[in-house]
Length: 452
Ligand SMILES: *Cc1c(COP(=O)(O)O)cnc(C)c1O
Image: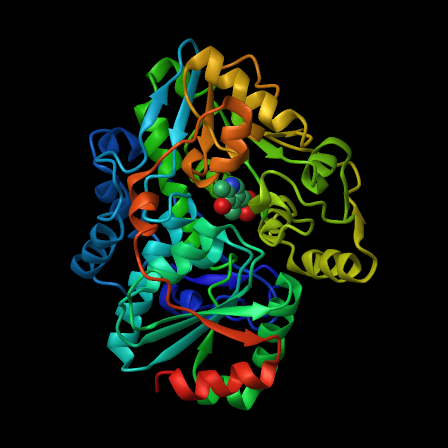
C-alpha cells in the first residue's frame, strides 16, 4: 500500500515514510492510494480482542513493518488502558450505546492514536539509528497525550510548551508529573497563541530544525487517523447484528480527525447508518453539513475546550474523497479557503453525514439529563454528542473521562468525579521549566537538553 498527498504533488510514500513525514511536502495530507475492502473479513474479526483487531486492520496498510513487529507495537500501545476491553461498548438501553474511549493513560481518546504513534516512532528510530526532538505547543489535552505516548521512548526527547496558569491544574500535572527524563514541559509566561507562535518560529528555522531533528506530533498524522478507525470497527462488531447497518455514530468533533476515521472505516466496507458530527458553539462543521458553506468565524472558548477550533485540520481528507480524488480541485479549494476563509460547495451532498451543534448553556443541562435518565456520568465533550440523536440505533462516542472536568461536574451535579490515575498524580512531584515567551530562550534550552 502506498500513500499519496491530497494535493497530488507529494509523491508515493510507504507507510513508514508517510508516518515520519506527517504533513506532505506539497502542504497536503497523506491518504491511502486505494482503500482496502474489509467487508469480507468482518465476520472473521468478530471474536478478536482490541489489540488483535488493531493488528489485523493496520497490517492492511503498514507494508514494510513485519507482522511480528507490528503485533508487538500494537499490543504495547494498548497495554496501559485500564479496561480489559480497551474500548468498552456500553448499552444504555433501547437502541442507544456509548463507546467509552477514555480508558487510556491520559483519560481521553487521543491516547488511541498517540500511544501507537509513540511506539511507531521508537521502532522507526531504532531501525535508522536516528534521534529526534519533538516540539509542540498545547492548550491541554494533546500535549499530555503526546507526552504519555513518547515518555521513556528511546531516541526521542519531547518539549511541550504551554501557557503558565492557563491550563487546568490536572492537565498540568498530567504533563509535569511523568518522572520521565526525556520529557520537558515548558511553562511559558504568555498565552497559548504565544506558545504556538514560538513553535512556528522555531520550525521556520530550517537549519536548526535539521540540526536537532525537530519533529511535530500533529493531529493530521496518517497513523493517528488509521489507529482511530479500529474502535469504530470494534464497536460495530459488538453491536447486535440487526443494529449494525442502521447504527449512526455520534462523534464530538473539533479537528474532524475522529469522525473522519469512522468514515474511512465505512469506506473500507464497514456498513453502518452514518455519522453525526457533533460540534459545540464553534460550529463551522455544523454549518457546512447543513448548508454546504465552509466558512471560518471567531473561536469562542467553551466548556468543551478540545473542540474549540474553527479550521478543522483533517477536513482536507474528506474534501479529497468527496471530490473523487481530484487533487487539482483540492488545491483550488484549499488555496481559496486560506485566502478568503470561505468555500461554497456547489450542489453540496452531505452523504451519510449529519451534524448537530450544542451551545454552552446546553452542556451542563445535558450532563444532568444523561445522569438522571441513564445513571451515567459524561464529560462536556461527550455531552455535545447526545444532542438530537436520530431515531435509529445510535452509538455515542465518549471522548474524555468526566473525572478530567471536576469543577464543571461539581457545579452541575453537586459531587466530584474521581479517578485513581488523577488522584495519584496529585501526590507526584511537578517537574517543569518556567520560561519567558521568547523563541531564542527556548532554542537555547533545546540546545542544552535536546538529544542528538
Ligand atoms: C480532541 C478532542 C475532541 C475532538 O476530536 P477531533 O478529532 O479533533 O475532531 C473531542 N473530545 C475530546 C475530549 C478531545 O480531546
